[in-house]
Every structure is written in structure tokens, then in C-alpha cells.
Image (cartoon, rainbow, N blue to C red; front, top):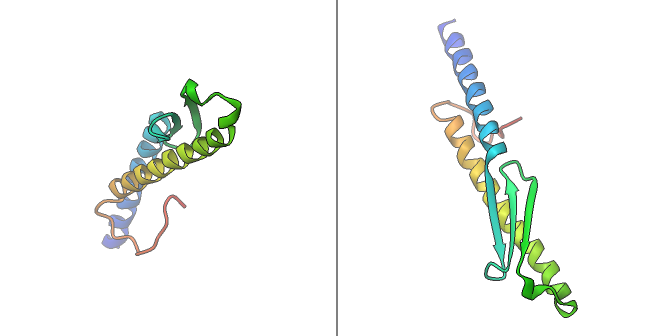
Length: 107
């Protein structure tokens, strides 16, 4: 039963760390860029789009398709950074716990 008590204690600690991590992700912003910084996209740590900044030189009818592609690329860059940050935070939250390999958190 001592082992069960330790497991419950670890689960409670992990739950506290997960709540802290989620609060941190909500308040964190990540910037993705494309076109040498001509298009910038900001996402929250939870992946919500907050802001798009576009260099005025891209605001011509001839560059419409280029601009669309750059927005998509900047968003993908920001999303990749958010995912990397989330993975790092999850690693911190579950540090010291003997979780099965391949277990995906949060559930």
C-alpha cells in the first residue's frame, strides 16, 4: 500500500504542475516569421492567433499570392515553436515520474 500512496502523491504533484503549465501557456506568446521577417504571426502558447504583422511593401495586388503563402508559413513557424515549448513544459511537469513510454499527456 505504501507504493499506492506514493503513486497518488506523484499524481497530485503532476496535476498541480499541469495546472501551472496551462496557466503559463495561456499567458505566453510565440512569434513565427516568414519572408525574412516581412510577415510575423503571434500565437498564444495554446495556439490561439493573436496578431499578424505584414510589411507594407507586400501590400500590392501583384504580391497577393506571395503574401498568402507567407502568412501560412509564418503561422506554421509559430505553431512549431508552440509545440516545442509545450513538449518542453510537459517534460518539466512530468520530471521524476515513471510514466510508461509513449504515454501522451495531457489526456
